[in-house]
Image (cartoon, rainbow, N blue to C red; front, side, top):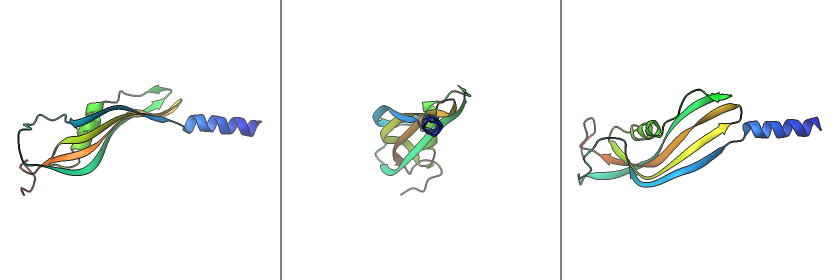
Length: 117
């Protein structure tokens, strides 16, 4: 009986879920003129903003920060295409919560710090 109880408690503590919040065709948090005709698709990238939970969350996660982190993985990236935004919840009493933004980079090689093609 104790073994079964320990297994159930361990499963509850270690379990979590990720819930899809939004799907977007194109998304960006950067001020940028998108009328340029020199865009290319890049790699699939992921950005996350998570905060720890110790009985209560020790901060507030932000979708904008998660998207900024995904876009800023490449200095030539100005936006994301085929964006999926998910909410992360891996906590019971301890763990973490946050947001995950995943998308395909939209690159503009005319940006400062990029090699123009």
